[in-house]
Image (cartoon, rainbow, N blue to C red; front, top):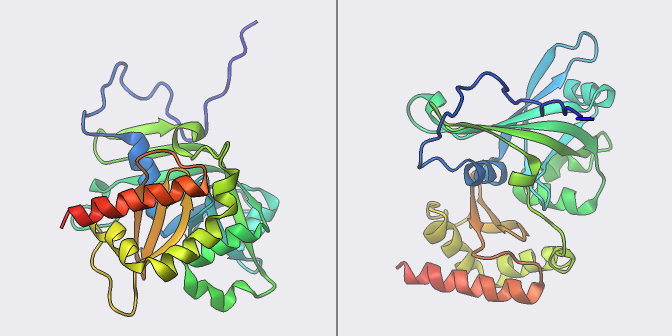
Length: 264
């Protein structure tokens, strides 16, 4: 007996032309991963608890080590009341720039948001959004993490792709050693290797030179790469190879620093 699986949320079965080919310079997986890791804020859509209408709101966004979106919300907010009734939601992460807004890529992440009190998620969120320290300790604020069901990437005209969680999220299997040392490794890089961090951001990720009082810092790391921030600027640096151990991380970071210095 053949079991027909329902389509993932956000997909478009039967709507796209058959055998439609994507442009050769369109790389959906890498584009989705960049938007997911480097976008600081997005539009959260929840289901209104009274009528079911889509309710859109703006939220700051960080990621868990595997890339799942993480938000910090107040229980006094309408979107939180909606999530307490129905966790199904989506978050739109959009790049910005000059010209037509629709010419820039955007990623819709669909899934279920659940409250998660893991201290590591709170630390990662506050590293990305340090000003949130002002209210994060208030009793009505809590961290919510998305259990991702699907991604939809729109990279502009004729550049759309439906992606599964397995294609975009970072596989954490076997990376327990790296994740256990993430907090200390991030602190060490920021305190003792600020020059290298700045080189990663400016030479490898194309970020602007940081202002003197707002340096580039590492806000998180995972088997696939580094997350960097300087004020409202964010960048993602991908590792040349998958990293699962602290000793391996040191070697890869040195290789990246040498590569960045070689660019002049």
